[in-house]
Image (cartoon, rainbow, N blue to C red; front, top):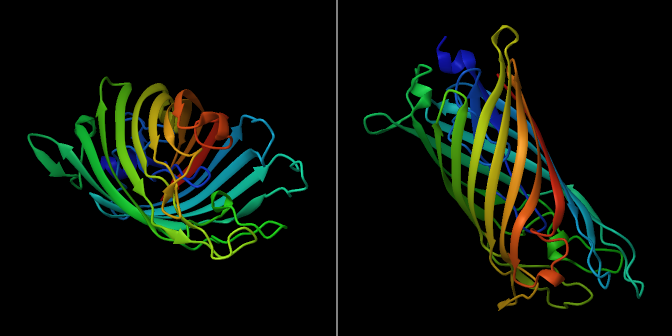
Length: 338
């Protein structure tokens, strides 16, 4: 059995969604002595050929309160189940099924009802191709030594969502809020690039560049839009940097503990409604995400606390419940490779 199959422990690292927006699914891997992986950002690891990965994740977002003049989002919970398979040493494919809960804080003055939503969201699929640099750029080979795993690693990935959720959820008053729906109503697409390098025997550098684009969807008629509103959610562009440090290694018990720190830049375009850019949407922000990843046998567990360190929202005072307005996000994931 090769080193890659016998010692490599894979961990799936998606980042889906926040309100109307969602991140990019990716994978990371580490062995007891090899490269580390960030908690959330995509890293440059593909699954071993013939191996399957099962994954679960929770992203719990707590938002700061606004002025109370409109319905306010208190918490959002984004659950994710996923499965991946290594079809070749350099190509892996994944299927993700998200479940979302978006919770308002209280009734609004004037009798407008709370608008809590929950349900299965849009299924997404992704393919990933892995490369390495070793006297030239080449696809990931079948058999690699520990030294080989320390080469520069790269991946390109692409995928999209399928509108399997419910885009037309209504509250008790019969209103539709596209940002509270569990579907974008149309397919979306995403693409990205990663690079990973072992800097020292214990320290791994990781970077990810990715983008998501959406299509325009006409929502069903409701009490305020007799013809149904047309919405296209804003573009998402990400640049993430991360360091993972191997703190503890216990080969006898097949256990490893890594500490990590990620800096994540997110640029959001404005949402487009009926052809017009919408106020109180979009902006730029940087998150910091310190975390820990534990490896035991063929399983991995990751935990991190993510919070905005810098924001330039377009109309920040009006964007309660949007990215960049969180108090914090708790990130937890678990995965198993077999």
